[in-house]
Length: 228
Length: 100
Image 1 (cartoon, each protein chain N blue to C red):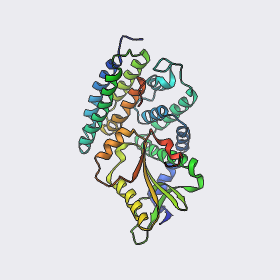
Image 2 (image 1 turned 180 degrees about the horizontal axis):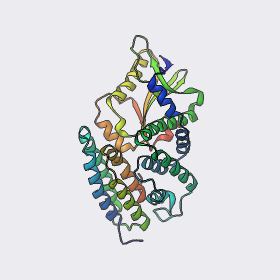
Image 3 (image 1 turned 90 degrees about the vertical axis):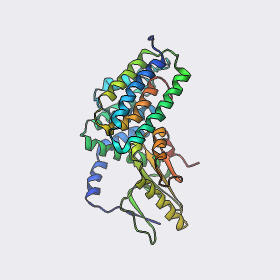
Image 4 (image 1 turned 90 degrees about the horizontal axis):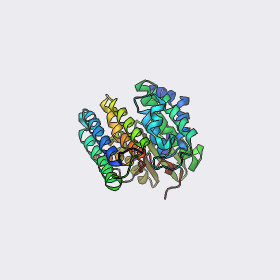
């Protein structure tokens, strides 16, 4: 098993420009330290219709107002404000660009969280995984962790609807091909969406996914923690 | 405090959610996913209503739920509606002080 940079075709060049957008790094940096409620705020705003910040503040009283349970107000209002501002900047892009930025953001967020566990140098982007005697997949993996004796491959999705047969097959094929070479490759999907929705989506899939870990908006911080 | 209960807010949210589901069902290839997704979240709302439905809702919670309802009422794109079938319940659950 060996890793290789993806071909620099036209798609890759265009997408590299999206990935390099400072807004992607800004949103990912903020959400790497965010609470679940703040991550749901970001998902709602980035996928929202209204761009009026006051409406979003009122929609999330646990972040911007007195808590719903009547206890004292939130402790991270500054961070919530920064997340709201950055998410609105994403929403303010045209529909196509907004979609691309959201996808790149989930990859960047995943890479940042993984780097907390394995170090920045071990985390790579847009990599193909090659196996002896096996035709290489055309599409690269969004994020990989490349350490001697410990490799991981991640595909990142904005929403549960992004879970499909192709991505599940690609991840499971890589895992089984690695096993065929007596290598261990952990594979996972990172989905910036609710676990409940991902479970429903997975229930509709017949592609193998029993050995594929699914990281959801509720469990993102697990990327930064050793597997149990 | 308003005169409303958590169940009142959930009932309003579910009415709006049904309209959002109809919009999402316009994507024919995703019809069964949309139906199952909506059922899954309704089950969660039902559980909250059964557990805390009679509790008084705060004015802030009521306003937040109404704004979330207004937000999904603006959605015309059925693909975005499907995305919101997942997001809207989490926004509402947060607004009423529940685990999303």
